[in-house]
Image 1 (cartoon, helix red, strand yellow):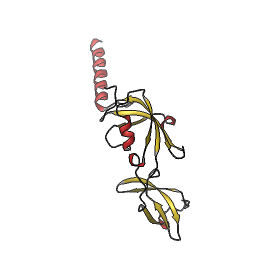
Image 2: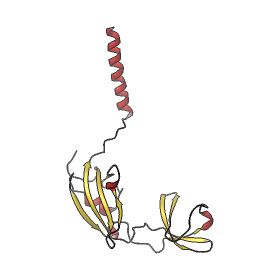
Image 3: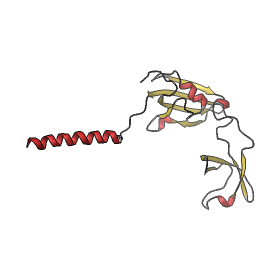
Image 4: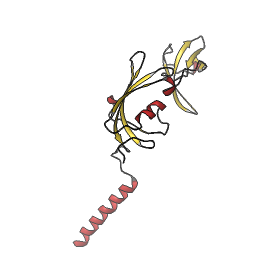
Length: 174
């Protein structure tokens, strides 16, 4: 295990993310039971976040500022689609600004209702943080896969074998 974060490491970090222009907090890992874990350099997080943790050590803290290009990219004005109102569940409240969870062949996403028309709503498919500069307060809290309470099948088999051997020895002595 290494003390300095490098590409390929699985790390655990805590962070607070805010929008630069407004100071609005959009995410905070400290409120969750476990820190955020990811593999550095594997494309699992936005590029600027990934690059910023490299070279940090466990216990290091730093604040970074990311441009839209380093975060979620610029807003794409063509990423608006018309979506039939009939496709919404009855209980869904259709209003401008509402978040619409969607799933498709490329995975799950969330769209925002941009406009409500007679038979359709206009959905904005841009990431909600696209076009925004972001700040992150980062803290590296671990390097290496996090410990879990679950054991592997191999570990369980080894424990069972050891228990059976111990029981067998006791029975032989009787």
